[in-house]
Image (cartoon, rainbow, N blue to C red; front, side, top):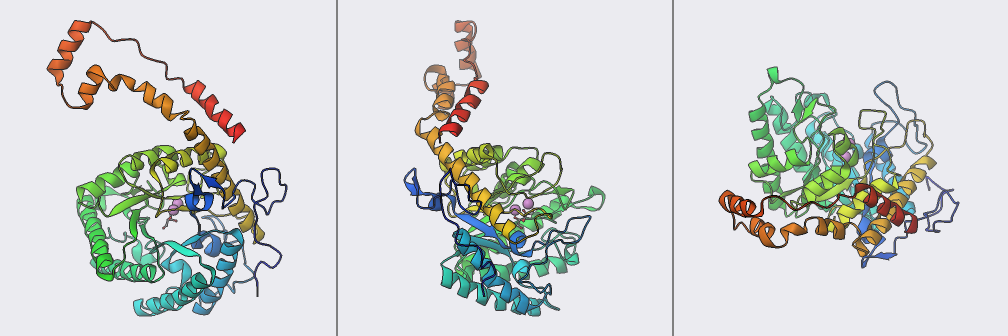
Length: 438
Ligand code: XLS
Ligand code: NI
Ligand code: NI
């Protein structure tokens, strides 16, 4: 039986449509820069917020009792939730989904029971994937909800917990592989600390690196060739998370010889919690070959935590798409790690939310492509640095000069040539112009 019988497959109707259940910008087959929108954006729906989110917050209980969910933690309930999820994925026309092991299947009384619960649900996921052609963008292990992770997961002070995590990720990797997952994500919610009085930071980071090496080795052993990703976040739930931002992650990966095996899954709300813009985090990762995938959401200016709202801001999406078009995103994707507000408790709100996010990204893609087609920003940037294209600038870039040569050059010249204006306001107006036109 259909869970959303009154909702038809969402269609593209164009910017003038007033139909709240239609796309105005996302036209999956429309070609932009030689690829379809569907291929560029690789939209992904996350299972945890969309199918396990119940509207609870730190101050209040859930507000959403879904008609298809009996509210129990049974394997049966977990299995019957899966076709509902795939009905929504199909009706929205998204090509991918993503999950944590514990979103899709309940924890059992022991590790082996938990594993067999997971296997049972994975069978249903697999048959729904085969029925619909919808694929798994990535899997991950939830190593933050259960009380056993109170001191951390792979950065715990308790060797048994570390061993448990090894076993858990082993299983999650096997299932991700079995389901054809194209990536595998680590988000270290408990990989950090609350207080350095009780923490051996060096030891914890050494352990974390060992853990990642074990994952790389095991992936090789089972033939999993998906991309490993680390998802930066500075805090929440821990006060200081080790994967705090793109720069910290890349430094960690380099220090522990993991650069060749990992890229980053950058999330908008995490970027802003770290005091960065999303564009900064993407560019910082991209310029070092470390941009893997994105968690597409947004925070709230008035709230200082990870509110995981759906992205609807055209400027934000344009900035993101400028960077994604530059560096590419596959085998990663645009994963809506976002949840409807607790007041938006009706199932139809799940559709409005994803339609809005998909349209905002499609609009961002079009605006970014138009800007790129005219070289409207890159051309300006290239010109801004043109003093490094010849003469002394070129010699500096080529490593042909040291301080002595720079001094000789400047002594002869006397002083610098005046610089060019940065033209920030002019460029902001340029972006507005493309926003109007595209
Ligand atoms: C939490 C994270 C989480 C990861 C997957 O803040 O965003 O949802 O994406 O573990
Ligand atoms: Ni995330
Ligand atoms: Ni998050």
